[in-house]
Length: 488
Ligand code: ADP
Image (cartoon, protein in one colour):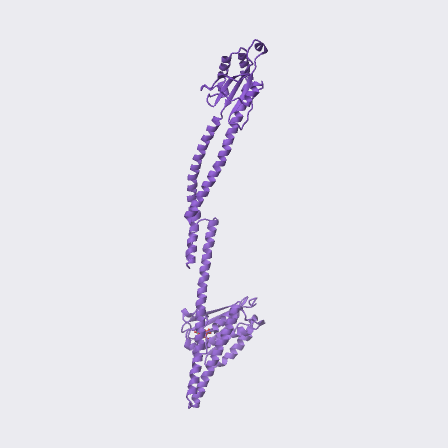
């Protein structure tokens, strides 16, 4: 890519240089011509009108002394710019225009009768000329006095000066050569500039192309080096940011996809387990007619228990999916969290006593009312307190404490149970995650309780955290804003 861009750039530079130089050349050539022409005519005019040249020529003419006239003109050669090559003077016969004397050493005595010569023959000074013509000329009549004319002298003379514009043309040729040199130098400089440009501009673009190609192949880790702060630098930085965002997004998508697969696998497994036992017990009963009544009652008990489990799992799943889809509405009201804690405590106290737990409720004096969905908050409390009960062997201690700060209330449930291994601590809020599946199942758990609890607390703008030490106990703390989450 960069090669073709380089070639394009070289080509563009060359084109620009050549175009520029052509314009410069055209203007210069024109300027040189005009300057040369203007200078010629003003020089001639000033010599022929402001010096004694004409009067001296006239004196010589009066005597018909062409030689003398030639000598006088030779004296003025320097001032007239006569170089005998590009510029010459001629002394012409004032009537026929015939060349009588000339500075032209090549011996050319035949000249073209120009308009200026004709004008001078008519007796007028011809000190102007056509700037478009490929020559410049002036012609001045040298009239003779009446006395001389009477004495039989000729009809006077014409001094004619012609310049073939060669000087201006050779100057232009030199300028052209100079410009060609400038084009070559410009070209060399432009190649150097292109090399620099290609390093500073094209290499990030090249990097971007490579990174884009890598991205097309699914590799988002390749980053472009950003050295400059210009547009290219910003583009490269934006490109890098975009690549990282896509990379993160892809990772999140992959994670979400993995979670989804795990979730589907978990759901099928969790539903299959109770279904299998129901089927097994029902089949056993239908295939064996003479089962003792006691056993039959036991079997039926299992079947009812397992279908209850299934119902619970399906209900929990439905609740979670309502949270996920945002279809779950919260009935927000101001309510007494203290009353809720006392109600939940009372509901569980009997079971706690049966399991010989020390079961305490310690509340801060005048716990403030909070804004939220009372039934859901009680559901969370019930879940964390039942967990404490489920995972604490009989005869343990369960302390429920609650208090408030400026804007929050907190409730902590501390147990002296089996605890949670450190590596599982972050995962217990995941759907279906259970440290010990068998123990949870036995205690009627679905592994969805804490996921639902966290969703509810999150939607109230609060937080659910857990601290635990294996074999020592667990403390789950719920924090809720007193004023609720605003928009739930
Ligand atoms: P479950 O229905 O299995 O109790 P939860 O989502 O409520 O599901 O809890 C997830 C897992 O976290 C439980 O299976 C258990 O292993 C662990 N857990 C929760 N609370 C406690 C606790 N107080 N002590 C020990 N382990 C706990």
